[in-house]
Image: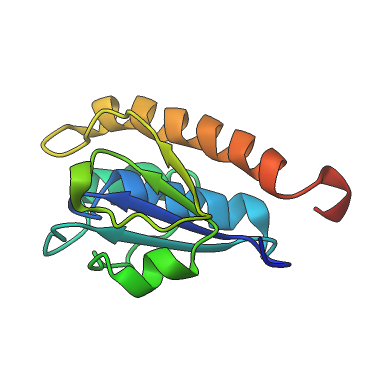
Length: 137
């Protein structure tokens, strides 16, 4: 792993789960981790309910957009976290792969997306403690 760990979050549309995870890890890590997100079949835009529940935490996703999963993004990552992308994610030796089983926020209202966001936030905080010792934060 490099001096600054690189984490890639991948879901199908890169419009919900992976966007929330990337924003939350970026926020909590404060530059100690380089974060990317991508989708195996990117949507046209980020889920509006996802934007809203993230704004409740002061995290603005208005400039973010769904990005395609590339081999280069996976190759650059130290840790690849999949969230329902199936077999679309390329496998490289020496990478750490995690699969987070999370409810898809697609088609759900804000009240149903909040618990998904909170679950992702808990997982992101746990991951951060593994990647970056507390003394460097």
